Image 1 (cartoon, one colour):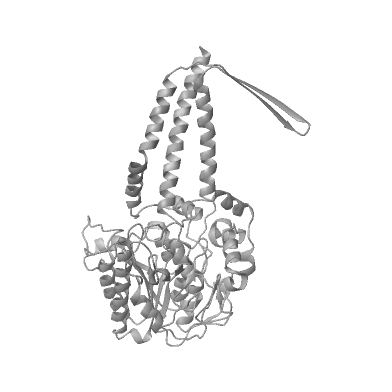
Image 2 (cartoon, rainbow, N blue to C red):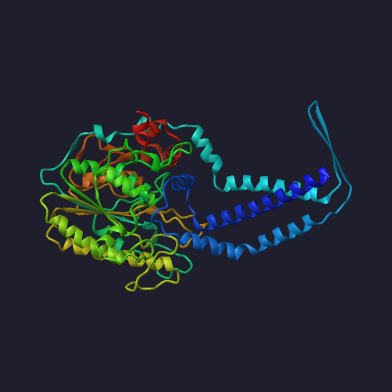
Length: 513
């Protein structure tokens, strides 16, 4: 009787393990097919921050993937349940003799019920599945980096608060356009479903006409490195010269008194110099901690999806893509910039586009559909909208004293445009329009989005003592970036490791100091 109870427990455990195996493999398959270059650091970050304000279309994508690929797993589960409901009695004897040098171990395995074999087989498959998932998610590398801290920050991080910054007497306005997932890679494509080889002809023209930093002799940009590859991480890297990395054993961002309290960034610098800081986006600014970062680092006035509802620009039940679309974003931006330009103080207006967000992007009625690939059309439409917006700025009376920076926030995450096996170099787009300084060293540079922080200040005519802030280097100067000095692979490898300096001085400053 006891033997029968034990077998029933094993039967139930077999079904539970089998269901877990199916869920893990299906989820892993969906994740790898949807998010080509998402790292474990980013996963941990989004687990630890609120999902408030996110576009939940990825849930629909996941459910569709389960529908399309789950039938075979359902069949396996049903077949296993049937086998476990039967009682096949056979005698199995397994004798194994293990020898290792002088050590000898004999194992005698006597099985009287076929279902025991099934239980052991499923258990082994479960263990293999866990190991396989760890390998595919690169968990072993993450754990290695957590237990082998880097001294990168101790050796190279420059505390911005301690750097002498000299502003010109006539201060320059700044308009900073973060373009969602905008890559220079889009200008020269040969992909299935992308009939237009160049998806960003207007951004390419802006780069040719103005200051564009490239990793090649042609259109290029910043190389992607660890902990800068999602929206808030990209925005922090470009405005503070530091990555965003949460330790797996730390608290959630919602439990912190502040977001990266040890960081001193662009917003704080400009606020101290009398600038009006403003941030606009069509999504909910609370998503990913963006609101916390910009309010706590420069006291930005923030206009987002919720603000548009309060101003009755859109109705309470309005929802397109991630909130309101870029067609409205640029319309509202013109109003706010005009308002800021009429004030006596200089202004720093930052904005974040959203129509090119994965999975498929978003196209409105003004967009052309020149490609079979939907996302490619979203890129082309965004390219045109930003170009028209820049031309509008250049027609305004305040333009003479205004610098425009356009930069992608990070590389495209999903596989909707680039196939998983795509192996060509991809870089983040940038252009600086109407800077107060020039450079003859803009081509064949090795740099990251963190270098945009001091470079942006330099474009406003600010003189930076030492030409470095955070982990960033002023690209207008002749000083080598850290990526050039250390090599991009070594620099990226060190960034991915745990940093005691980062955790103690930047991430947890008001918790530990």
